[in-house]
Length: 145
Image 1 (spheres, rainbow, N blue to C red):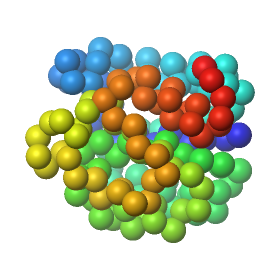
Image 2 (cartoon, rainbow, N blue to C red):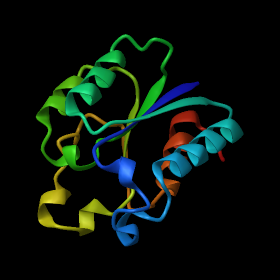
Image 3 (cartoon, rainbow, N blue to C red):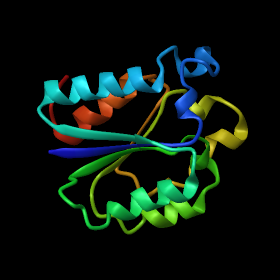
């Protein structure tokens, strides 16, 4: 099974930005864990991160054709709460999508509680830190890490 992991805006500053909310791992350390979990489960992942919404939309478009991709883990970060462009780009995708957030956005500021991805993802995981990605991999692959 091949899984894409698409991380969005400001996740490149993990470990430096509000570690109490987002944890102390850098994006490189988070991706290393994701690759290790995927290996343990027996699936292949590709992790990507960008601060450019248009690039993120292009990555979503790549999921249309699947190109050997069986599922995706989506963390648009702040774009989750207002980017209808990302929702529109993901809506026609016909592979399982899991929305993941490091912090518990449902218990934070009111504006963070809304997700434009509601209704198009097959599963949602919030507030579990890096382990949310492990849980998403397990959910998508049916395995355990």
